[in-house]
Length: 135
Image (cartoon, rainbow, N blue to C red; front, side):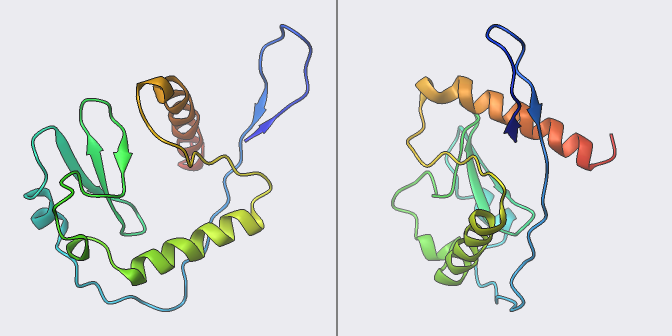
């Protein structure tokens, strides 16, 4: 997303682009729980999902915020994530930062104070996905 020049009090103008990032050549053996098994472990008010890359996400159904960590801190992390998966994520982030013209990433805490900004970024992301899908 690129903020285009403008004038004081004029509408914001943005240029949004999408760039595919290749997956690493090596395949990773998946010894984790299946998504269905993992969904059975989340407490009420939470949902488990999977990204297109195969990583598991946990979503607070009230706030709609997603997290990489299981909502139960006592849950064994090795059942849903492992070092190989983390290595792939680091590889992908490296490529994003290396080849991206510009990157917007939130690395800070979540919470009520940030919901407006997250909702705006989600709205922009939904529009990009709509454009990438042909409409």
